Each structure stands twice: as C-alpha cells, then as structure tokens.
Figure 1 (cartoon, rainbow, N blue to C red):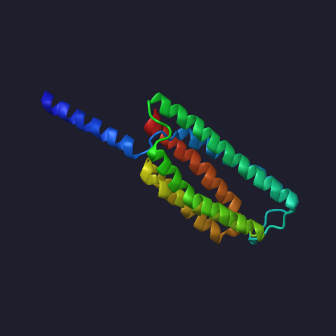
Figure 2 (cartoon, rainbow, N blue to C red):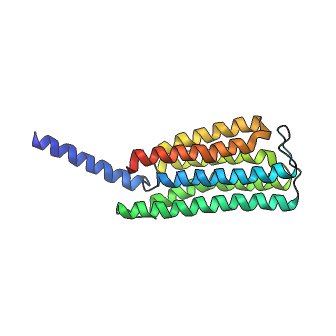
Figure 3 (cartoon, helix red, strand yellow):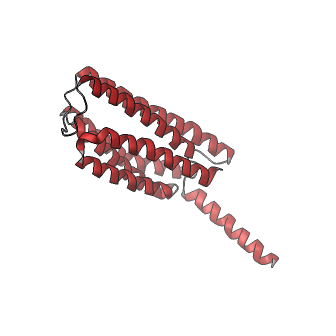
Length: 207
C-alpha cells in the first residue's frame, strides 16, 4: 500500500515538473482583474470624450472627431495598455518568486511570441483604420485579434485562457455587426470579462 502511494506521489511530481517546463504557470489572476478595471475606466473616459463632442452615433462606422480628440483617445488606450502590462509584470513576477520559478525562460519567450504575432498584426490594422477615419470598426478588430492572441498563446500557459479568447472573438464578431456599439462591447470584453476571468483564475490557482 505504501509503495502504491509513493508511486502515485512520484507520478504527481513528474507531472508537475513536466507542466512547469512546458507551460508558463506564473500568470497572475489578479493582473486580469486590474486590467479589467483599467479598461472600464478607459472606456468611461472615451465615452465622455466622444459623447461631449459629437454624441454617440449607433449606426455609423465613422466618427468625425477632431485630431485633438483622437489624440486623447489614443493616449487613453495607451495608458490602459501600459497600466495593464505594468501591473501584470509586477504581479506575475511576485507570484513566480513565491513559487521559486523563473520569470523569463524558454516557455515565457514562446508565450510572448505567440501572443504578440496576432496582437501586433491587429494593432497595425487598427492604425490603418484610424488613418482612414474608420474609428467604429477599431473596437471589433481589437477584440477579435486579442482573442486570437489568447488562443494562440494558450498552449504555453493555462488552457483556461483559451476560453477567454473564444469569448473575446465572439464579442468582436457581434460588435462588428452592431458597429456603433463598439465602445460598449470593448468595455464588456476588456473590462468585465477580464475581471471575471482574473477572479476565476485567482480562486482556482492562487488561493
């Protein structure tokens, strides 16, 4: 009986070692919660800017904003992105140190590369849309490409992230049909879903 118990423990340890070597398991669930909060705050500020100047148009994919207002929206987006990435790095680093894991290894590099390929592609496409004044289709595009990024990177971290990716893509496609409501779908995808996902990951893996 003792030999059987020891055998099962050895298998569990080997499995854990294999998982650590093939998957990046230091992602912090709390970073997802914070990212969602930042996104909701950014969406609120963007809504105020758009609504105060021209009002929300629920039919048009064009937004005739002044260059100054567009710059404000870009700054808000960059601030949200910067805060989310910064918080993610800090919390993930703390989690890795507590567990005695390396923060930057081969798996982390593969995760980053697979995450960035669709993300950068989508970012460039959104800049092209912005250049042509197609502001209304930027929100759907960011949701779709972000979802593709998560799915592409999920094989190098928790598989749960794949489901978040599917949800983001679904929201992006719906948002592409209801173009004028893009900001609300963006807030739902990057805000609410991130908070829910982060909370689930925290209670599932970190408590």
